[in-house]
Image (cartoon, rainbow, N blue to C red; front, top):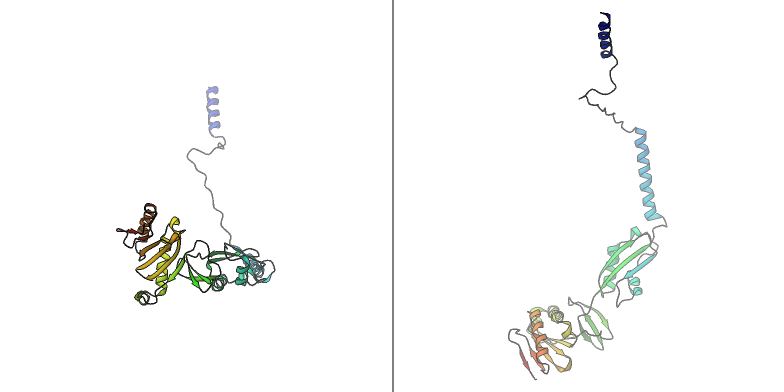
Length: 271
């Protein structure tokens, strides 16, 4: 009788022993968030002082120190103008704080003093340089002025007077003194019309053009090398007229006069 009883007691003891270290199935760990502590008043004061000191140092470095001052002006993009001309016209404030340079005023000054400049981008190149990215006007036509020539760009703007005519640029002759077109359109619009005609010409034809003559808005003519003439008419339908003229110059090589004022009905004579 004692044996079975002892076994049972042993079983009870084993069941009532210490709990296992493993978590019972289905039980989850719970993470507790620690409360965030707001910075103390002393810490805030220190942060504020550091921020003010850094800001003051930045202002001093930009405007009062010798670290970030204008020491050089670097122009790029010049073709006819020289870098020296651009630097002189810019008149940048040398040894001034680079941050204080008025880039808009400098760009305006350059365009006013050098009309050949079409656009200019003024940039600060830290730590010591002002960069000038220049785009020059390109002459489309020339106006004779005594023994000199006035260059006219794509917008009809007269921007420079030169002693020698640039190679490959046709001469513009404005014969509109008694034309009604002068009173109706004005000289500037007539000049722009002539420029647009020159721009419509393909390169193969343009190289042979010696003169563009404007008698009225509807009477623009071209003089080509070899004494050939082209009655262009108005500036309207320029692209179509250019195609017709190119074809006629190839088909009628001995012709002296070409009339493409009405591109759908061109005429050739003098062959």
